[in-house]
Image (cartoon, rainbow, N blue to C red; front, side, top):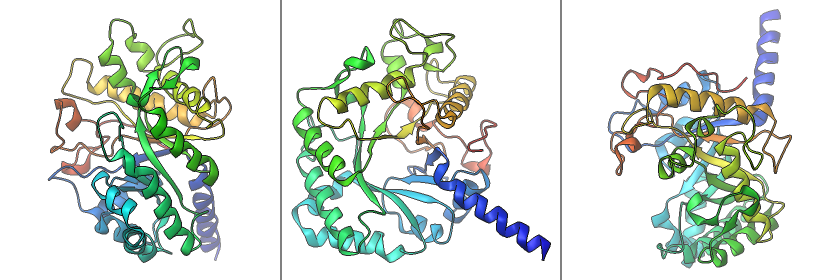
Length: 336
């Protein structure tokens, strides 16, 4: 009896703590050597990572997540956005097949309509808002619109100005696109998801960005009051949001990581340092200079190395774990 009571208390504490935990991880699947999905779900839970981002409605992942402690961020792939925007029945079907089919049983946190869509070079951008609205309507029909928030994930490429962070602003080409989306987020009290990668900022300007600033190792603030590049990037997006009517919109960091191979500063040691310091910072409750005193909900990119990712060699080396053997690359404590 005592053991049973203790077990129930521990379960209650773990469940209560899930919402408060800041750190999640991205479960990308662009690989041919990943462990079975059920094993992956178990890995998340064993490592006390109770928030998972997936980029498409993978049915095996959704099925394996039933009854777990995971809070799921699920993506609408870019290629599906136009049909969902143009046909409300497509939105209804998407919600039925990927949300309602697994509710209750799977704890959905956000639906992310599109990833890193840029209106300057991607015609899909014209359909994002309407797709978000149609999915919202489909959720509302099931009375889930307040439980599951709808957003999109942007990257730093939408900014026309990012330094100093207080001068952060969306580019002229992005303003019409993002302003309407921000209005939707304000009205539905949903966050904006942003992929924030100091690694890419550093390799794009290594002459002017100290490596220690990118790795959270700098001692003291720089001339504009920042101790790390992550906060500077995040606050530049907050400043940009304020300029388009989004001062009330919270940012969720939907990706942040550092590769362990494939480039000059892509090393095991640098990646370990970045992930460890990022976790500590996100969980600290210190926030950023523009948004002090709050934890930063952050999704580490990514759970595994993905050996079929296209692009630069580093793209295949962002994993926290090696897929083969599922051994951790680094000893990290994800959530307390």
